[in-house]
Image (cartoon, rainbow, N blue to C red; front, side, top):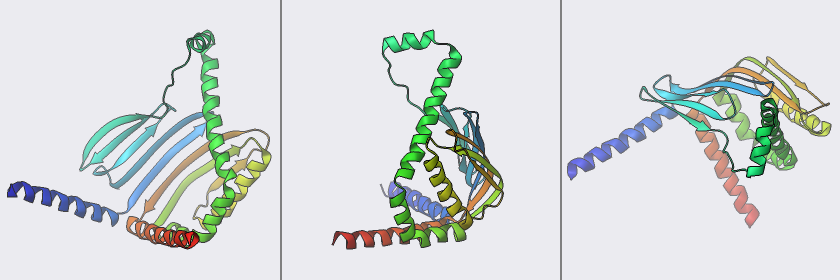
Length: 233
């Protein structure tokens, strides 16, 4: 019984030491991807120690994401579905089968695109709350991006358009207000005020100091809790 207890204690201490050591090892992220002509393609490498602790994600369509985890050098591949199939009435199924294949694919791509645009518009509709939170906690957020995150952009280009020109203008204002506070330089963003659409191409490397990010987020959380208690009183 004592031997089992020693083994469990040693395993727990080992996991704690590994977790603490990971905080002092820089997290690196390498992203290469694009979304053009309504077709996504991306490869993301996230690792503390390459091929020892990390993961690689590959996306070639909107159905699955292929993931390979490395734990102590052992690769563990699997894939996750990005969408869940829903049961459809028999009449709809027959109608879909009668439609040409290219029409069904175009309809599915259009629905996916509209859902993505809806999410962006939902964020813009809550811009007042986001601006209030930004003004209150921008000191912590700026500290994270300035001190503990390093970007190395090889290229970034985008062509963005929302359903309403006013929403496109609002999104452009938000993006251009954030860009000067980031180390991004080679950025080419174009805004389409005529029709909705999204084309993005990105190649970048990101390095994160996890211990600094963790401590800053902890301070921000404590400040948020303190503000919440004052508001309740």
